Amino acid sequence: MSPKPSSRPSAACSSSVERATPLKRIGEPEHISKTVLFLASDDAAHIQGQELFVDGGATASPSGAPIYLG
Image (cartoon, rainbow, N blue to C red; front, side, top):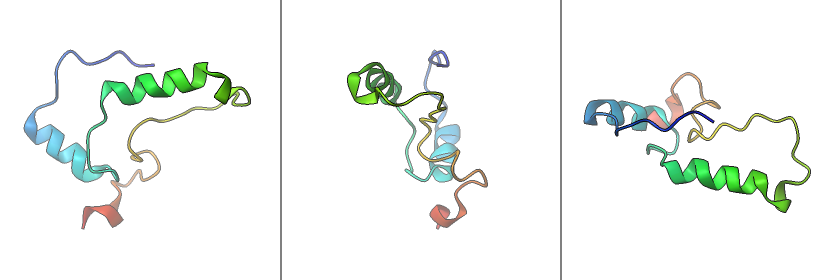
């Protein structure tokens, strides 16, 4: 888990990230914490040796999600 940034990104940076992310929004710290809670729960008992990217789908579309940029 990466450390939480100390402040929100600038408006220009936020806009750029939002356009390049399939979900069209910047993730919140709660998205990470909910993922960690899930992995620590019994519901994730059979998940082993996986990397989970909580990035709004950006990793699945490394070219900037061109089909979502409309």
